Length: 211
Image (cartoon, rainbow, N blue to C red; front, side):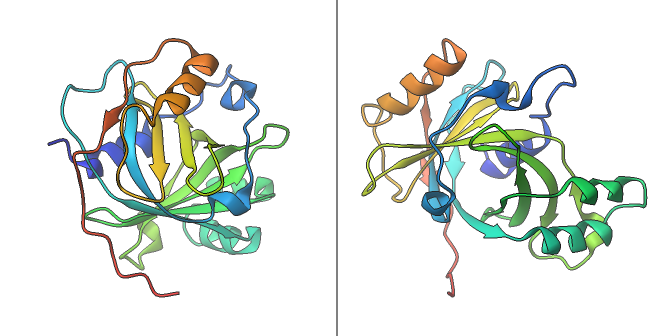
């Protein structure tokens, strides 16, 4: 069983954008931030060329919207003076993803102007630590697409790494290959031929959420 904690490290730290490549390849997503906010289960991944032929265990991810002031505060107290200049470019919609893995952590990303659904990761930090010096700055980008009807949509997170092409989320834990067909077809239309989706074989125990 391939640990999704390892997979998350792959998702967040190896999908960096090359300097000569446009953000999210200029794809325009069907994206509405209000639809994305909330708790989702990872139900499948679409593996990249280097992903190993192993089953995966998945878990829940919370998407929430935050403001630029809060993110700037975190960056200013985390990064050194040179890196902290990134706060000057923090703007627009900012999404925090909380990954409820064996070791929960958060990733903050900001919108990219002119490219719908495209986000550039800014910083990540373990959710169970108050030591901001352990935070990591990010330069990866992702794009979020909402697929399907309002009652039971899929959330497709496209990545630009070599291990994972995309992560597929749903409000429930169960999914079949047939149900994933529209997701797979969209990704293939945007980025060419893809490996078949890898459905999660088990889910880690989700936390008790207090709202």
